[in-house]
Image (cartoon, rainbow over all chains, first blue to last red; front, side, top):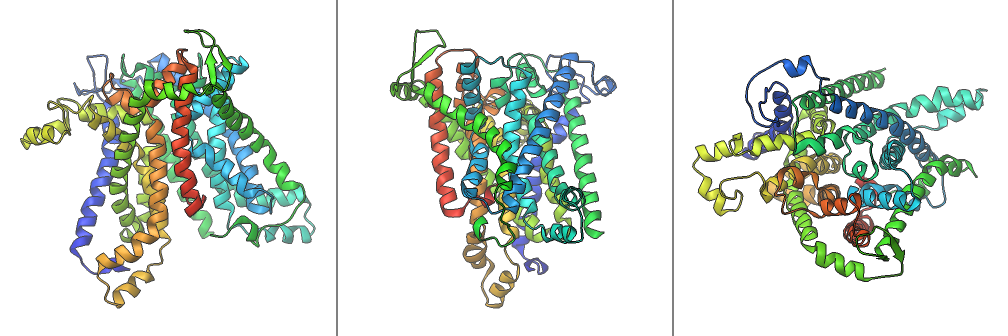
Length: 265
Length: 299
């Protein structure tokens, strides 16, 4: 590796990289710091005094808590649907020779390369033309859609290196198809599927733009924050966001650790 | 690039792959393809009466012209913001990706994980955090003031009358921050694929680092740079959260205008037309990209 010898360039690279890292983390630290703020105005953007109150009563702002629960409900349904539908496509593409697989790949990539605003507008026009009532169901449909492509492509990438001949081996030894699936196929694709599910949860819980087009009266957490941001934003919002961030970090760390252990075993 | 057709690990089956993929593909068809066609139809329709949301399909092309005269400024503004943010993202992402790929040793996975952490923090809250950082009495302007650089920053148009909030700088700053990981990850992936013995080969042949970088590393990482460009520019061009929370309320970007027109009811055909113009600009970029580099590096 080239990095063994000392070069002034390496020092510059170090400094620049650490600078970019700091840039990535300064707003996150800002969010965490402002959970301890005691704002006297309607906004929590200027430091005014230290308090533990927000952490002692994280759910006291009912409208925001309800919105967060709504977001979790949407994500649970949409990401489960997206993970099942997407993984099946990934299995088909990653395992079988298919006519039109190039077209299918393009169809999967397009939703990811379409600006959210266009996807939101197009879903709006569809539901408007159909006269469909916008609400929980339409939000779930929208979230399922943008998570689906994402799951299909990431699971496909992860199953690329899988040794499918293990299935043949099991069948040759007399294992029935269902048993083969649960004992060989399922554990093989599980890490990829679980990772895709977690990332799609993050996508769903955080989505504002598409949701705003199809939500009708349904208020998700990002929608509540967006609508309140220029009106009044209590410090509890920062606490809720920090809780989500901490839960996510714990899940990432835990899944990396178990993933490493599985590789070693 | 290996295509699916010549991958020998794939097997043949008559119906199975089609049955497996049918439910998902039907979902994409119904809720992605059909809505886009609906949007196109509305863009080609005429409003039955002013102030109404009702439209009649009639192959009307004039909506596109009206979309440009009504929303041209906002579209142009969004594209400029997105372009500047994309360049800034690439300039910051490349060195960090290079550092993680080649210089981080056993810390590599930890650093990669840390780059992902912002993804799991509310996008809106991250943007609101910049309200605090950009504030008139916030830390950034504090540093500028301490260094007595107000004049320089105003002359360079980085600040306007000594402020950052509600200026284009704040919007571009927010966009750059929010989409930096999208530029970083594909660049990292393409750098990581470069065999490090190429570096040794180059230095054994007395190639100075600058020339190795220019002739070997940079060309080999171009797919990642292009993918990063698309993955940053696409969401940035349609985004209006940064402009809404950090920018001047009198200078909206195209996404905000589209959203308002649809949600509050109004000129659907013109809003649909301008959405499709944005979509067309991006589709051309994506098709050019996939023609030269394939779709594999995009995700």
